[in-house]
Length: 332
Image 1: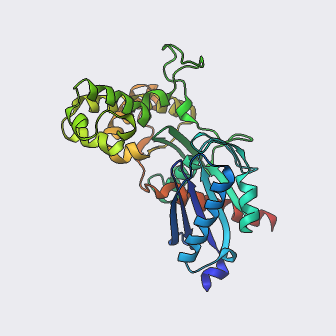
Image 2: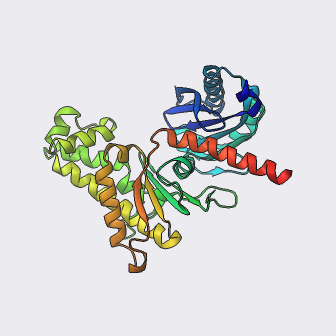
Image 3: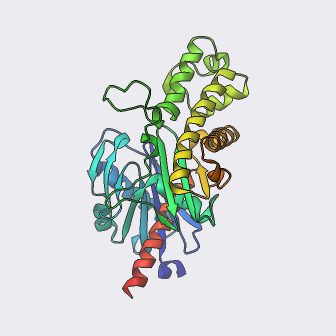
């Protein structure tokens, strides 16, 4: 019953297609977890209830109930108000201005800290993974979109009432024709998995990527990170070129962040990087260095994330611990 006395920390990662809850002891060892699919095209309340159910089942696996929880950290996609716990916009969930923090606090009877999911992942890498000991960490996580986060001297870099580091929305090629909404092309338009899959589907359709065409086809939705990696390994050099060019654009954006923040560590994560770590590491670091002022070259390291799918859920729990313990100390 020691755990029940000390209290446990719960981390939660709310993705576009899945949700994951993990229960951690005071040393951040996992003692219970549960995973469920996220419900699409439903009211926010249905997914909030599903979050509660997932946490309860993770607690049950640990042999505990809600009274054991000292705090919950939840990583949510999109811009978040970390003070109020409101998720302003989560496109994949069709959420807008959802008061996640208040709702879960009342339901679970404990403090709930809401943070952007990529911020949580970068914080996880800072505390437990590839960026331990760094003064300033920038994380870039390409996937369906492209998420970014920054930990500066142990704190999540944030705005006054909204999270920041939306690197996927950086204007990346201002000379190109504007899109239909009159905004410039962004990093997501040239470097997200969706963009890479669309270009790869065209290559397969035209006969330039025979392995991809034979084993996956030309439907964009079926061309995922593993399929791209397998196509490259099987000799589809056009696919390798598409992925490399996309990764080099990420390097261009990373160079802007180096000039702005002078991080000592840039962490690359997400499904694309996990599937092709060497390619992304080489392309991003090379492009970034090439686009820097000389004084900034070699002032940082580019690394791939260590924690995989656990980064956001572990980082969210650790952030909750940091905030709650610090607030308790200040109050005392």
